[in-house]
Length: 200
Image 1 (tube, helix red, strand yellow):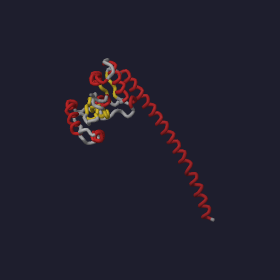
Image 2: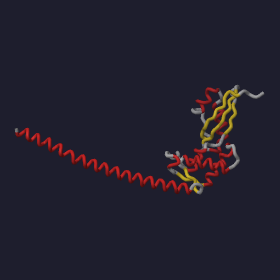
Image 3: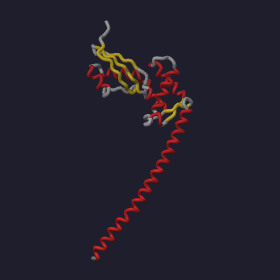
Image 4: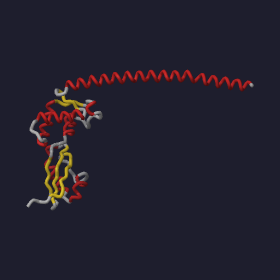
C-alpha cells in the first residue's frame, strides 16, 4: 500500500550547503521530518554541483518520512555563473552587462534539458537566449547583429540625451541671465526711494 502524501514542497538551496537553519528549518520543521537527515541526504546528493543553486522537490508522507527529487539549477543562476556576474542588468534587454559564448549557451541548455518538455536542444537554447537577453546578457555569435543594433541605438540615444542636456543648459543659462538682469533694476529703484526719503 502506497504511503499517504501530506505535502509536496519545492525549495532552492545552494548545493552541498543545506543546514537545519532557515529556510530549511522554517519550511520542514512544522512538517515533522528529520531535518538533519534531510540536510545530510541533500548535501550528499548535490556535493558534485557545489556553487550552483539546486531546486529540490520534497514529498513528505504521513509517517513523516520523505523523498526528494533534484531539479536542474534555475536558468538565471546558470547564466550569471557563466557570465561571472552577481546579478543581471537593471534595464534588462536595454542594457548589455555581459556576453557569453554560444558554447556556454549550449552547455546551459544541456544542463536544463532533463527538466524541459522537449529533447530539442536548439529550442532550449532559444529559450535560454531569451532569458539571457532579459537579464542584459548577450550571446556572442547568436545575436551579434542585434548587439550592434543595440549599441547603435544606445549611441543615438546618448547623442540625443547630450543634445537635450545642452539645450536645457542653454535655457537655464538664458533664464538665469534674464533673472539677473531683472533683479538689479528692482534693487536700484528701492535704493533710490530710500535715498530720497533719507534726504527729506
